[in-house]
Image 1 (cartoon, helix red, strand yellow):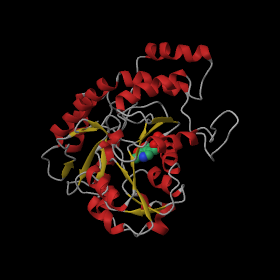
Image 2 (cartoon, rainbow, N blue to C red):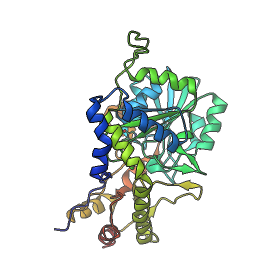
Image 3 (tube, rainbow, N blue to C red):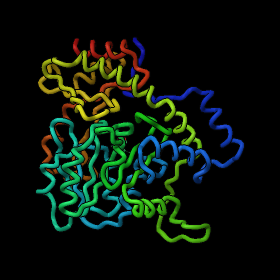
Amino acid sequence: MKKRINVTQSSMPPYEEFIEELQPVWTSRWLSNRGEASIKFEDMLKEYLGTDNLYLFANGHVALEVALNALYLEGEVITTPYTHCSTTHSIVRNGLTPVFCDVKEDNYTINPELIENLITEKTVAIVATHVYGFLCDVEAIEKIAKKHNLVVIYDAAHAFGVKKDGVSAANFGDAAMFSTHATKVFHTIEGGIVTYRDKERFKAMSKLVNFGFTSQEDIDYVGTNARMNEFEAVMGICNLRHFDEELAKRKKAGERYFERLSGIKGIKTIEIPSDLEWNYAYFPVIFDGYKENRDEVKAKLESENIFARKYFYPIVNKAACYEKEYGAAEVPVAAHAAECVLTLPMYADMTVEDVDRICDSILR
Ligand SMILES: Cc1ncc(COP(=O)(O)O)c(C=O)c1O
């Protein structure tokens, strides 16, 4: 049997570099609660993401939940069903009602043309996902939000390192959340980052992260524990140093996929817009009218020790916990995507030979 190829593989910095960066944390015995490693990591990220209003979290989900919580909203939130359940959970766990809006055919992000029809007097926000690192139509969404006085939060879990016309994904919407989970394009083992546009809203959010403490003796808010620890911050420091090289390696693998899979009847890939610096976070392929369907292709790849993923599947409004209330939402494009998309293995250390083996298998 040929070597196993997983859908992803975490990027790792050189071991010696990690140990050297960890040494002061080890010696200080300051392992959490925003120590020196976290502060250094935050400073590096501020420069990289082009924003000062940035906070580190224990994971992406809790980051999104807290980013929304800090706005103290009540009512309905227009959102996408073509996302990780985390996006919807963050809405529902804040006592808000999700209203599912269908997605665009070109990149499966929320369709702004359908948003206005769903707005009622109860609508307070739009929470949308930059799917696979392809950005939502941020200008159109901003226009709608301004017109109806809505907050916009982006689930940018997939979009670390993505830029549109040179502007980082951190700078679109009122807030953006990046997951830095081990499977993500940039990781801190577990972790999340929230960026906020408005300084005052940002300050309100930062108060919730550490149980709502505002000083050693003052607990002014009903907060939570959502802190990143120092070992994770060290991983982030090291990985950020190597991020551009890792992106370049992903790009090489991605370009090989495009080369091998374009022009094949029944196979579609998502086109990279000319104004977008994409991060090759995933490699989604749409099997629509191919000689075998998506599930058959996935099974055959597995028989050859290659593991691709149905992602996103199921669409969130069809998940057991939401189906009864939201299963009937009219989202045909998202439903079709969930049936046809397979994300192929993608990580920085994939070789052109790995990509060729996967493509040969699909084409066979
Ligand atoms: C779109 C999206 N949102 C949120 C999350 C949750 O992030 P985390 O796993 O860091 O909690 C994920 C994780 O895969 C995701 O893909």
